[in-house]
Image (cartoon, rainbow, N blue to C red; front, side, top):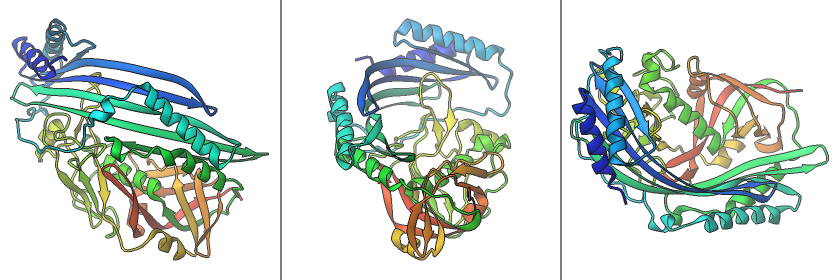
Length: 445
């Protein structure tokens, strides 16, 4: 097995010798197994072994970037020389201050499972067939799409200031999209599960839940256009909170491309909303001891009692703003650069049960899943409610169709008046039910 950390040091030293003021190197090796399902049949099976390294070299703040799909020492050296040469010709950037210094991070348990690494395509096929059969057990006329997979990743990160960290992690996942058609009536739904460890993975319910919900969405009706309370189920509320924290990306803020520009320290939501970002949660899907630049992860309050407490920084944006680096540098692949992103989001829970929130809503709309990502600059949301129900007299009366939701994200957050105490959990992330008042619903009736 290749020593990724040693290779990173070789590449980093080469970039500095070639004229870089500073440099960092990301080395990554990934083995992934995937099985796809189409029309309730196994469509394809794939095993991919991907590996390579990337180098960022800096000269007078200007950056040169290069990568190679190789783990050979000589290729690492040549790639580093190219990155350094690009840095020498790059436009100087006075906003770049420095890469991170080395700091000790906390170990995060549960990110790697040797049992997952030992799995092959046979197990992924078994899971996929399990999903198909579980869906068919609900109703024979169901059609399924989706798939299952396994991933094992090892990576190392080295910079010229002394950062030298490495980690390994595993993941398993399965998603099933179920469709049932009866005459001109169509119902559909998507269900999934993912985990770092086999003990946290539950593939059995995925196909069944997808089929059961697809059947529930048969008989959808149009609703009248109105301004109503909207109850967002766990998956929908997670989209709202993730979009909010994504807009706290300091790079977007500094480029005036976020609806949260100038909002730090100000109210962006009701007092019921507190969102904690925890990059150290045990076995979390977004957990790691370090961020994409080697800065230790930590727990961060992004929104607290409705107030935006911080923007999310990497080394560049924190240096430019003269603010503390929050450890949110994101590096997804050796092929790409460094961005910024939240980790495991854990909203503060409320005192209501999900059913109590619905019962207390005499008329409204319940949104299970929907396209709720806002315009990143304005915060405006205009999306279809593909999986929702009309609430009448405190009950889910019927599924809706041809229905859209229109609201500004900050207005929506400020109108949240209830957060549930029960929730859905995916490793590291909790997703409660929330209710927002006075949301514009555009119906087709």
